[in-house]
Each structure stands twice: as C-alpha cells, then as structure tokens.
Image 1 (tube, one colour):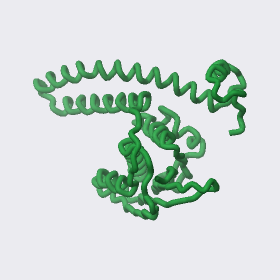
Image 2: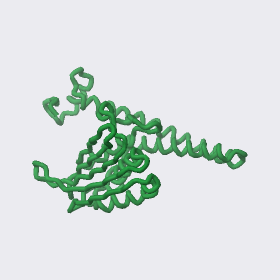
Image 3: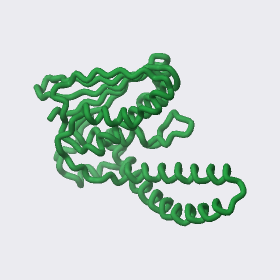
Image 4: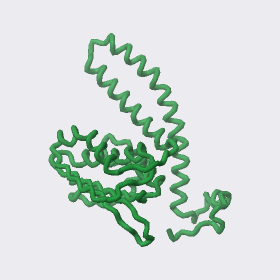
Length: 250
C-alpha cells in the first residue's frame, strides 16, 4: 500500500495518536471502524442472546397450549433465525483462537459438499470438481477454514438458484517470492454482482440479499487473513462470480 505509516511502525501510540488525523489512510480508518463495530456487536449480541433464553422458554410453553401450530412453528423459526444472527455476530466480533495443524483441503471440500448435497441436487445444480493441487495441505484451523468454505459454497448455491453450474477448482501456484501457495476457486453461474457493490462485499453488514446478515463474507475474509491468505472475487452481472482463496501450502 502506498499510504505512509508513522516513522516507527511498532509505535502503537503514534498510530493511535494519528487516529483522528484527516490524512489518516483509509486502511486505518477501516480498522478503527471495525474495532469499534466489534465491541458494539459483541455487547449487543451477548445481551440479545441472554434475552432469547427467556423468550424461547416462554414461547415453547405457549406453543404447547396453542391452537395454531403454524403460527407457533413460524415464531420458533424466527427465534432460531435471530439466534443464528447473534451467534454470527459473536463469531465475527470475538473469534476463537485458531488451533493450527496440517489440513487436507480436498477432504475439507468433499466434506463441505456432502453437507450441501441435498441443496445442490434439489436445485438441479451441476457440480464440477477439478482438484489438481498436489500437495493439497495447508497449515491452519480446520474448523475455521470449513466455516469460510461453507459460507462461500452456500452463497454460490443461493446465487445459482435453479439449474446452474457450481465449479470447485484447486491448484498450486508459485508467486514471485517462490513460496508455494494453494488456490481454491469457487465459481457459480448465478446473476453476478454489480460493479458498484464489489468493493463493499467483505464489509460487515453489507449485503445484497433480501434477508442476508452481511456477516458471512466478512467472517470469510477474517478467517482467510488469519491464515496468511487472500480472498478476492471476480464477477460481472449476467456472468456469474468466482471467489478465489489463496493460502500458503503446508
């Protein structure tokens, strides 16, 4: 990045003092916003989650006596949705420390795709795999990596809708630094993403979905960056989208 840092890069006080400066690089403004957002999100999510325990218990008691099972089911479903949302907020704001170990990426992808098999078949989606990476291992936290991959695969399935194609590709690449990397490409034939939305896709709470939370892709980016990797998207309206994760090979 061309923006300049304070002279002493390890001087946290210098970075903090510059936080309100008008010429502060956008990168640091974004980090400051995310830090504050994380504190607010974690606090709000904890309070909501605590309140949901009492609400859910009361709703279950009412549902047992209700003469309207459809309405009871609807309320249960909405409570589950709210609980899932605040759980995502907590994961984003306060992620668990990663437990790094060698992770076989092809096995992880196969497992994730098995979990989505019903949705893929139900939407008549053609699944294509090209697992060419050898070696296919990265050094990371298996649970966190699966969470990121599941988010991307679910997004792809939802974007395709009916009768499209989902292609998963892995490949080894060697950049100019000579360090072997493993790339994972997830391509869908969905409607694509508007150019004006692309720069904001990984921002927390930004979503183009009607009922989206805007946290899935933000969590993906956090996980990938914690694994010393990068994530990018190539997309055009009417041409589908391709997410590319690049991680250091183990």
